[in-house]
Each structure stands twice: as C-alpha cells, then as structure tokens.
Image 1 (cartoon, rainbow, N blue to C red):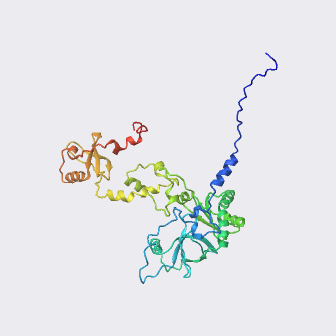
Image 2 (cartoon, helix red, strand yellow):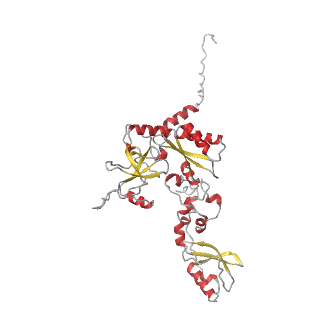
Image 3 (tube, rainbow, N blue to C red):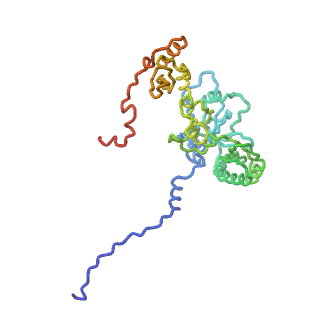
Length: 396
C-alpha cells in the first residue's frame, strides 16, 4: 500500500454535553408567569393600577365576596325612597355597611374611602341598591342606625397608591410579628395581618388555646411598625378559611371559597345522618367538625319525622326482634331475631308501627316474614359496580 494513500476515517459521533440546570432560572420564570397577587384576599383578580378605572379591578371575579343582585333589573316602586347605604368589603370575609352621601353615585366594584377609627380605610363596594334592605334585615340592623359609618369619597390616585403600599407590607409584617411573639414566649399564633388603607392602623388576627397577655407585644409591635395596633382573636374555622386548602372531598375548602359565616356543628348532625362517630373522618382541616355536616341535616330531620322508636324490641311468636339499621329515605327498617342476628329482614315503617301498636294491645303477630318487603336487586348500572372497573372500555 502506498504510504501516501489516505485512509478514510469515519467521523466521531459528537455526544451532546449536558448543561447544568439552574433552578433559579425556573424559579424566576415561574415568578414572571405567575406573579403573586396580594389583593387576592380582597377578592381582586389583579392588583389595582393607578391608570385604570376602579370598577375593572374586581369585575368577573367569582369568589366568596360576591353577592348576586337579584333586584338590579327591578325598578323601585313609586313613592319608595332609594336606600342610601352600600356594602363595602375589605380583607378576607370582613364586610360592613356605610352610608353614601347624596351627591355620590356608586357602582359595585368601585374603590372607595370610608370612615374608620382612626383615619380612613379603603374598601371595594360589594353591594348597592335595594338588595341592601334585605341584607340589613338579615344582619338585624336598622337603616337609620347611628352606628353605620359613612363613605367619604371615591378613592383618589393618592389613596390607591398608599393602599397598594399598605397591602404589600402585610405579609412581611405578619412574619416579623410572629418572630416578636416567639421572642416573648407567647403561646399564640398570628395568622393574618390587615393594614388600614391610610397606613395608620394594623389589625393582627391570632389564635390561642388559652388567654394571652399581649400587652408587651402590643408595645413592641407599635414601636416596630409605627402604627396603631389592634389584636383580634379568631377561631379555628376562621383560621382555616384564611389559610385555605383541599378537603377530603377533593374540592377547595368551603370556608375558603364561598362561606362567609359559620354555624355551630354538633355531633347530633352526624347521628341523625347515621354517620360513624369517627373523629378522624368527621373533622376538617381546622380540627373541628366539618361544616358540610349541616348541609343535609334539615333534610334528614324532616325524613326522620314519624319514625318509630328503634330501641323498642318487636315481640313476635317466633321470638323478639331487634333493630339493626335504617334506610331513612326508602322508609325501611331492618330487624333481626335475637336468636338469629345474621338474618336481616326489611320491614316498611308503617308495618313496624303496626306491630308496635299490636304489642301495646297485647297482641303478638306470628313472624317478621309476614311484614317483610322484597328488595329488588339493582342492575349493574344502578349499583355503580361497573363504573369502578378499569377495563370497562376494552370491548368498545
């Protein structure tokens, strides 16, 4: 072979070099795509801008602050005076009524400056018009009450500018206040902070198991933030509504989405609905009984009216029968003989009442089977057995 003859050489395959992934870039990208909205707790879909109209801040925002005005298209009756009161919302579930000056026309969603103690606060009009009369009646308030404060004006650019600065300070203020409370060794948890629109007052919401002496804390907070301090204790349900979360049903917590007031929930609501008194299943994120236990409570109470006392045994010639379970809405009660507890017999409510009346008269029927109802077997579709099968679409 000639030494000068060149031998063809296959080019080497160039392996792509792995570039290190910088997590900070991803974090910055997410921050640019999903900026934090400090006004979300006030029902605003975005932070207010100084150059846009006030009412565009909260339009088309579906949240717990919204109240649909059912009377907006109904004209006021002749000779009836229009109401001069408007409902204004603030942070989280706080709402209040304010008197509107005669020369001021307000629409839902507008930002207004209202009377506060001390100074003024900034809020968003959540309801106006004739619906206010129904809201006042629901809150047991009188339209002529002197306790109703007044609206000063629509918010000016300077008001909104100071309001934005106050709201953006709330998160850092809360963390600083927590560190101060921990330094004092107080057994309390500061959950939220609401700074007044004129930046002269701050409301600190906290939870505590026992009574807390926070006089020293107030002094330190006043020296640190140079504002008037107000402490408000809230319950576990209010804390859960402010923090939010996902419930055992897979949906966002009711208290964090649409509920604005809380009613007491008792274990009797679980008993009436024949639920197992298991604290782990009946407790919500707040550690208290779930609010949804009250949703169907009234329906179960109405359905149980006329039900016989299930503690009384049925006397029959074949033997005594004891109650095992109840289907409230089908009006069926299952009984079994004391000697044969595994054999359940479904009996309609009217038949059970008939047997109890006969026992009171001293008459003893022959057997339970004479009063039983044949339960029709449900189809596969009605029982829902096929819906959980992962292979149900294979033969399509």
